[in-house]
Length: 120
Image 1 (tube, helix red, strand yellow):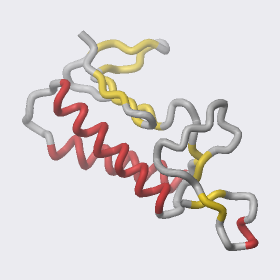
Image 2 (tube, rainbow, N blue to C red; image 1 turned 90 degrees about the vertical axis):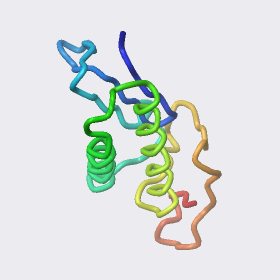
Image 3 (cartoon, rainbow, N blue to C red; image 1 turned 135 degrees about the vertical axis):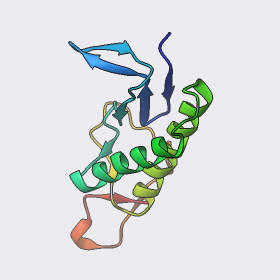
């Protein structure tokens, strides 16, 4: 059985990616960040998410791999993504196929240099 955690912007699978298919695994986690491209990412912010993921997984070292622990990691990562958005390190993708402000309503920034961006 494939264990997984799915939030709006974070998907974690207890699986390996082989030939574009997820193969269940008991010792490998696969992370999918923002699969619907609702946010605009830069490499630094994405690396922060990966480092936070590694940190959270390490905190569960030795614990059973189960739904509950996987959902806690996914939920903690979703909160981390929200903090990146609120801190201005990422922003909403206004060209996303479905605008969904699940991390908070955006507001226009007062900075004229950023007039085409939304800020929280």
